[in-house]
Length: 248
Length: 248
Image (cartoon, rainbow over all chains, first blue to last red; front, top):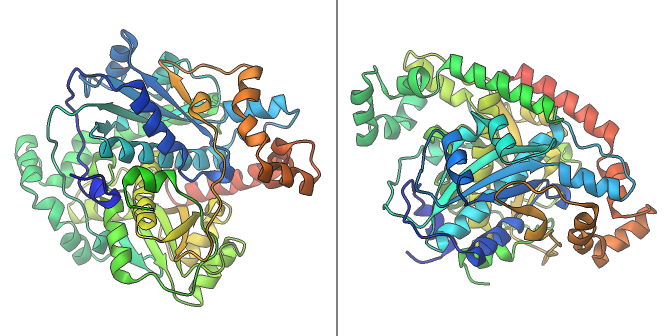
């Protein structure tokens, strides 16, 4: 694979197994620099990234992600960060008005654009990574472990290193499902069946249905992976943490 | 500029003036395809993108962004979308458990990774774009104009087209401000002054201070661009809309 931008993105695979080789500091700085060039609201850069590599911290952080990607030598926790900007305000004798929902949402987008630039750069350099949605499951514990002060909210976790597997190119819905012309077009039942056939007929997904003993692929998500009671408990915990962190 | 991934990202400039040339459908589909390959939570792809090009809709949408980027021929509104997934659940006779804070935040990250891949692809093809944070200022009006049903929340707006200006490479905080080793290191006053010198000493920013008549650059943000009362009003409106949209 070359390092042409479109090729890199079109060939993306999540990597969950890594060699023992560390990500060297110069390479880390280079991919972070790419992240920093991403667009952001008002050029305020309301994010930070914490790079965790040393033991026992690396393993403790991995455990808060339920042991996933255990061989990853580098853990990047990207946070919405209004703490740094508020500190900049204080140094300048100004008000500190960014602890609210508007700046949580703006900061979340900015943190994500930063993270994706960083990840595309990493993949173009031969590194592998996996985003871990579990950052939302243990947000407060992760914030405590990583010593995040008020105004710093972990929102993205990335396990990274040199790949020790090829990775699987997973299926995706196509633009016929996701791209709307002019206004939003609410799909019909037939549209849903047609555009989701790629998901329902995927051999890997069909095998998961068999292993899980569910009626269909969708039901794995709604009853096992991400069921209602779990979603509601986590949402309540997140809301409490956002209040505590001064972001709502 | 080549289309090497890192070069494309390192040379990013926001573009706000565009030629009259449209973005052709094939090119739009190509950059959307790059977006679709981005990582996303559980491969559920809880986002949609609305491409608005035709009048009078294009101008009406531009007005909800306060007339910014008025020459842009293509407006992309990226939304967190649990409506499509819930419809998929209904078709499969399953529960519809994703209208909550957890999936708003997960969807926001996924929508952003999608958008950033799309934008990097666009820039590698010679297109220009500007992200518009004003999507958060008029979220409900934008959702109404674009006929978004419950569960579809506009979170990112991108004005796009063929550049009619070179664009300015704006300054950024460096990794000494944003990258933390092992855990979060709360900066000292001296750290803040040192890492923000690039922002405070930037000639363009100093000129803005003079034009605005503020004591310093920071004060432009806290008193004029993003002052407290405005942030709090918008946050209250956003919260009300998220409740109404079934995402909280």
